[in-house]
Image 1 (cartoon, rainbow, N blue to C red):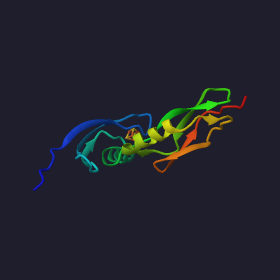
Image 2 (image 1 turned 30 degrees about the vertical axis):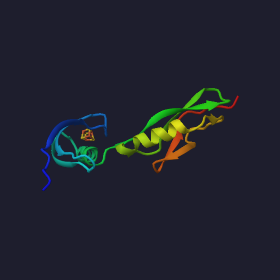
Image 3 (image 1 turned 90 degrees about the vertical axis):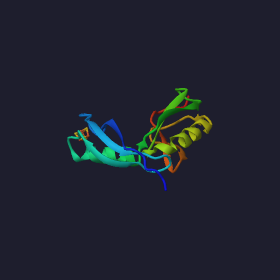
Image 4 (image 1 turned 30 degrees about the horizontal axis):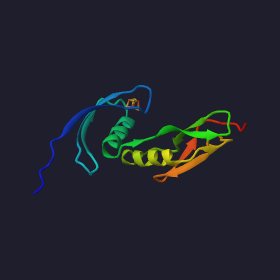
Length: 130
Ligand code: SF4
């Protein structure tokens, strides 16, 4: 029979709006399994519950970084994932970004520069051709 893990407690700052409510949560996390939210307090609205539940059960992150550009008015462009990716896939996305050869100018904001872990990575800075 498998021993069950003791619940953990932690404080999570809700980032859904500028209030930044501190939410105290009790949860169980086991390696290789989705976490389980047991209880929470401190949120001022229902969005806080949704946020802390996702943070425990399926944490997601939007990744922002940069990629080199050749032949342009800047040496690189900032990029970000078009949507959040599961925390466990951040390394895969970063590996794909690092393996991407320099982009050729011009680069336009919103241009898809690569796709990794099922999400588009888009440019967030214009780089004119020179
Ligand atoms: S719990 Fe509600 S009020 Fe508080 S930060 Fe989150 S969204 Fe804003």
